[in-house]
Amino acid sequence: MALAGLKVIEFAGLAPGPFAGMVLADNGASVTRIDRPSSTSSDVLCRGKRSIVVDSKLPSGRKLLIELISSADVLIDPFRPGVLERVGLGPEVFLGDGTRKGLNEKLIYARIVGFPRTGPQKDMAGHDINYLALSGVLAMLPGTSSKPTFPINLLADFAGGGLTCAVGILLAVIERGITGLGQIVNADMVSGTRYLSSFPLIQNYLGSGLFSGPRGTNLLDGGAPFYNVYTCKDGGWMSVGCLEPQFFKVFIETFVKNVPESFNPFDGWKPEPSTQFQKDEWPALEEYLAKGFLTRPRDFWAHVFHGTDACAVPVLNPQEAATQTSDIPVFHPQLSNREEKPRNTSEPENIVIKPGAHTYEVLKDFGLEDNRIRQLQDEGVLGKQSQRAKM
Image 1: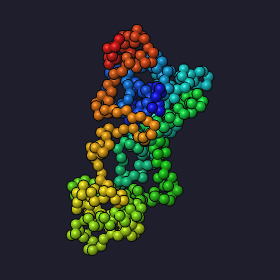
Image 2 (image 1 turned 120 degrees about the vertical axis):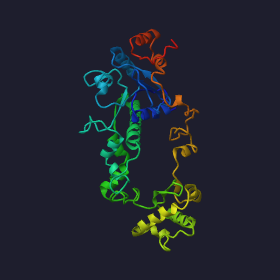
Image 3 (image 1 turned 90 degrees about the vertical axis):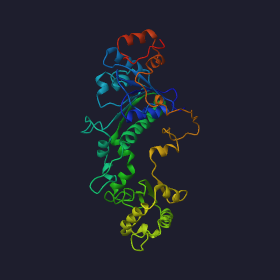
Image 4 (image 1 turned 120 degrees about the horizontal axis):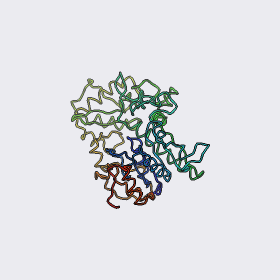
């Protein structure tokens, strides 16, 4: 696999850090998660990783972490600014600071924070909705007339944070192949979300295109009746996205043919393909579609539009979507030279890792002898979760 042989140290964190680590692990990297003593974990982004417990509050624990990081290729730091510096694990220790040589100058030191490191919010606590708010994107999202609606924590945490950080790590790996040197990868979720949203933000800035009007009046933010979600008779939903005229023509002609014969909310008026371009008729079109979808259950409409170019498909719940691919999302995109190894990802032990489950195994792989591992255990560095079984 592409990243086979790459050693990654990932400090346990929430959402974006673990996701970045999972992207690397899915492509062959050896990812070791560093957990605190007596910690518990509900992290579901553990596929392909191992866990070791280390008490960084103890001098021997900090020494061990320095050793591990000094022989790693990548470090993923999910903490707020200054946390690792306070325990003597800042980037200058490994990469050098211009006045002294670092312990591991090939290290790629990847940091994920919420706010830009030089901004006024740099030391503040926050979550996905806060980063989304400061990115300018939340103000553009659909919602009610009084406020926008936020999605679940996908845009900032995972796209603007975790995935962006993983891309930065891969770029640094490529550059290291040229220079022989590592570097710091700084990813903040506000800036990452802005970069991810370049298309709508630039159009909004220029005042032209798909996002030039006020929120809720544009083609892709709920302003267009032919790009929206509609409720059906049984409470299910249908998504409609027929932006192009040829697709709208297929959609509206099919829709009108399949509402009940008695359906006549506007005394004989029915939408036609030309209605798409008559913006003054959009309110009537939206009401017609909303009331029309309510006359039939979701699966009826799904069957009617299946195999057509109407760009109308049912909104599947997670369980329904899983039956079409797999229970657990798998790595994407697919690479033609990649040999996929079947993995039973639905088993709990392959989803959530118990902290310290691989402590002995990992330390042996990093070259520690049994007597050193016993000493660390006796000093309490490895916590109560450490395994003695193979010693």
